[in-house]
Amino acid sequence: MKTSRKEFIKSSLLAGTALSMNACNMGNSPSLPATESSIKPVVISTWRFGMEANEAAWKVLDSGGSALDAVEAGVKVPEADAKERSVGLGGRPDRDGIVSLDACIMDEMGNIGSVVCLENIKHAISVARAVMEKTPHVMLAGQGAYQFALSKGFQKENLLVEESKKEWEEWLLKSDYKPIANIENHDTIGMIAIDKKGNLSGACTTSGMAFKMRGRVGDSPIIGAGLYVDNEIGAATATGHGEEVIRITGSALVVELMRQGLSPDEACKEAVMRVVKLMERRKKNLKDIQVGFIALNKQGKHGAYCVQNGFNFALKTPERNELIDAPYFLKV
Ligand code: ASP
Image (cartoon, rainbow, N blue to C red; front, side, top):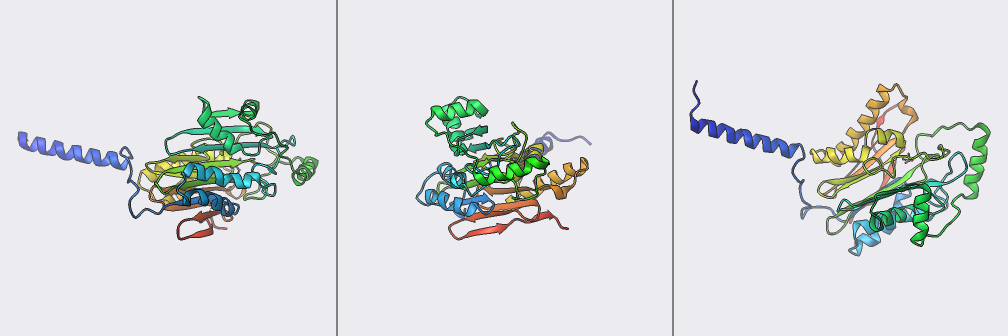
């Protein structure tokens, strides 16, 4: 049957519309802007120490400060606390007895900064921010990061506290590297926030896995793995076995899934399912690992999901201030 010129133009237009609708679904168009009904400000962070960290972040957010300033102020709380044994001062050492820190930060403009294997400076997050704001680079490592920090006025400090030293000496007797699933010998503060203007930023800081090999880098300082922010869509951060998070570019994946229309909860769950799939493919035991994601979308809605029971996160909004157990995959 011959198609008339009029019909041809009509069907081409319809196909064009379908294509551009598909493009929307594929995430090629900006997501919903923050609306009047958006919840803000909101701050969400990993683990129990997130409660205190959120308080510090909230002071900034509540007084109209930026999400960037808020997340930096927030994660500096556990970094400065010698009793918090996986972040900053008091962090657990590597197998050579040296505390080395990983951290990164990302703002609403897509500016990023990161430090890996930083020694003797407790506020790794502020050094990461200085990398972001005062260098032409996005990541500095080891000695270079340390020298840069000193040049910017950061103070040298011994980060190895007596308890960590004792644990390490005991560990040396067997030298058996065995990360435990939850916070027993590793964890991270990952924090993401949306401010009163509706802008998103995030920060992530850790001493990583206790008794890791010297020079080991986890997910936490890697933009896209431990943290990702897209101010049009949302933000996500991770904790747990960094090798598994890097394998799936975890936080970037969560944000991309939100771009495709998933809620923060669904996006975190889908990312965890990718971890599960790769563990199965590699015939690894899921019980041996933990990976947890938290996410916040542009509307201020939060979500979380993890591999197995034990991961919790702290949430603060104008109405809520809670420590919440994340839903998990592995039911034993
Ligand atoms: N993700 C961190 C790392 O692999 C550790 C943790 O969050 O438990 O270094």
